Amino acid sequence: MNRSNLALPMLAILAVLYAASGTGCATSPSAVGPATSEANPTAADMDSTESPEVTGAGLSEATAEPALPPMDRPFDGSSLEAFEQGLRELESSVSSTEFRRLNSALNYLLLYDIGARSNWAVLYSRLDGQSANQIIAQADSMAERL
Image 1 (cartoon, one colour):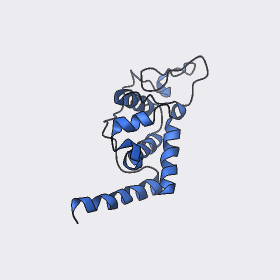
Image 2: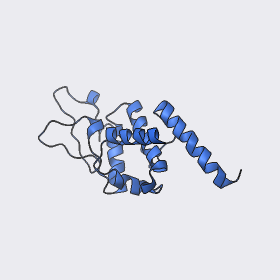
Image 3: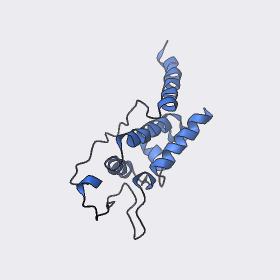
Image 4: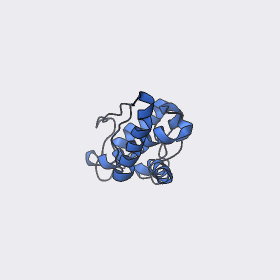
C-alpha cells in the first residue's frame, strides 16, 4: 500500500478507537503538560472555605455569579496560546479520565472536522466559546454520523 492508501484505514481505526473507548489513543501536539500546583492550586491544596479562582486567557474569568464547573467553562479560542492555556488550567482541575476524553475529542475533531483543515489554530478558533462538555458532545455527535 502506498502512503495515500494508508490514510483512510488509519482514520477508520482512530474513529473506531474513539467511539469504542471514549478515551482515544492520540495526544495533542500542543504539549499540554501538568501545571504546577503553585500556579493552579487544586481543591486539595485550598482551604475548604476558598473557592477556586479562574485566571489567565484560556478559560473565561469567573464573575460575581457562581463559578461554573470546570468542564462547563468556555474556552477562549482567539489564539492557539489562549486555548492551550485553557487546556492547562482545565487539566489541573479535572480527573485524568475527563481530560483524556476531551483530548480524544479534540484529536477526533482535528481529523474529521473538514472546516478545521487539520490545523490546531483553526480548530481552536472554531471551538471558541465552547466548553469541554460541548466539545466532547460535538465529537460524539460527529462520530455517530460517520
